[in-house]
Image (cartoon, rainbow, N blue to C red; front, side):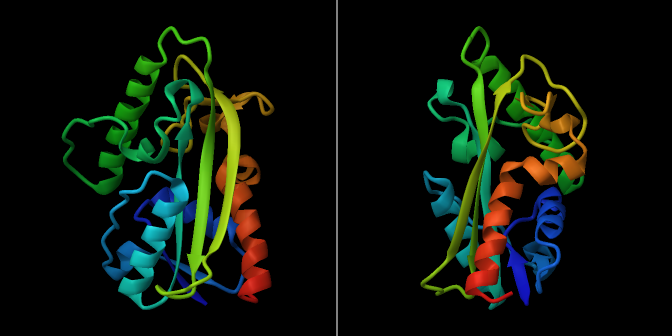
Length: 208
């Protein structure tokens, strides 16, 4: 079964292909089909994931999968939350898409550290909500969500991953997300946990 991933994030595509490997599906990035990213105007992860999945499914005329994820910091009232990817105003950046994304990540991390300066409560967690649709008008979307708790460090550590990975320290693993090997991240992450729940739903409901 061919499923369009409603994202142009190359890192997310690699992660989800690995996490959903072994199922009878082919995950194709929407960019490969010339589909633009959808608007994300909603206040919750699940609403934004559903909007992205419906947009991609309608444009491709096929099944679609969307992930809306981000970092939640209770001390900041839940921010960055659904605005995680565009939390800060990044400096103008020329060049290819991943270079611009790295510049945005750096700006986001800098703003987060600024807003937590002097704050003793640094608990935080990553959230991932996955939504799968058989078609744009599917009345029964599959929804799987998970959290990955940790704490925000005062400075970045590690060179792996993307986004806020260098700042979120996972006490149970003794490392930031950016310090984990990809295999370890794919065993423990919020997206890994959500993908495991989605795999079960895909097998049970879609018979994949």
